[in-house]
Image (cartoon, rainbow, N blue to C red; front, side, top):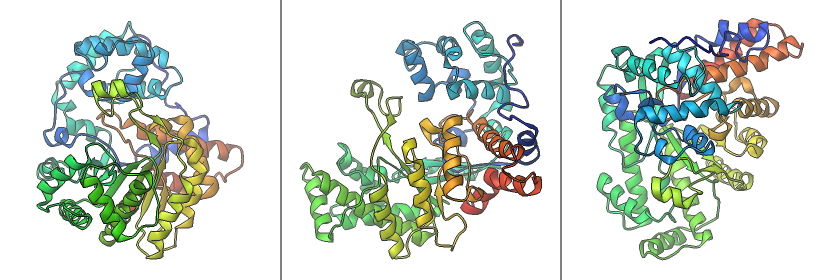
Length: 470
């Protein structure tokens, strides 16, 4: 049954407010390939070219953005992460969507339905069943397997995120499959860094097993991580990623770090000072490793995670109980970067903030360590997580424009677990083109499409292509 009622608001001029914005988007941005240099797509699904059973499996499962909205609207957990059927869950999502007006979910939802399924229909309680049936029927055809969903969006590179203990077997399988999209990984060693975590000692046991290094000292921990860095590099990895509340910095001695490690090994509680000294030491070690290997490092800063202890116990992490933290970022981040730069061991770096109050902090911080050796060596990353929306992206773009060079910006990433998230690149490009187009119309920028169009293409694709060299 074809869904024909209640056409959406997604038209050719969506978010493009004048002829300059429209020309920039359609002539320069829309056709550029996508380099998704940071995401959380499950590599096993790509490796196995998964065919999703229904629309709920591909669109609602694991999407804590949608889960938070449904909970806010009063939907029972049974219909979110519980044992309701896929169709019942989607019906409740359809019931919620009209009330997400002005939330980015409203835009993303209808962009994704249109771009992937050619469904130009407002999703609501009345249309949910028909939309579910039509999209699910398409998902069961070969045109909608995992690989085709990716290539449909003109994706050139995907970079997922894996822990040092990961076998990378799925990445090897993808590489040998003949899939024409490059799928790489980023090394994310957070569990080896945050020594105060309850499960830290259990994690060291796992790291011991995969590295074949007995971790009984701080040095052996570094040796084990070096083994895994070698393994990731041998499998094509050239990026790291860190999800931290803030980048700590404390002066330390080697003896102090060994003592802190042994204290934790003895299951004794560490002080905040000890915790931060240890994190400083191991982060410096890792960042020097990244520099020696020519890798790029990323820091995602500012999340306050797992706030609802009761629901986190029931459902686990990454299920929608996180928010923006108000951590102090500038001073310790500057000291940390300065320590690396003093040794000339600061590699290409991307800094992302979750608190919008830190926009100007990071936009100016990157300028301290751009040394002229590499174009755009230090990057202020795209609006992340709660800032991954029209207002958040615009504020990030404005802060970078005012305090740095927007022309050197490496652009958008999805940071998503969903195979239907790639229209977010279109969303971002429309916002960028509208920002430039408005200023062209007002006479604040030259009406020179050769110049402005080139910068739009660089932000959309060329800068990332040059920066990452995948």
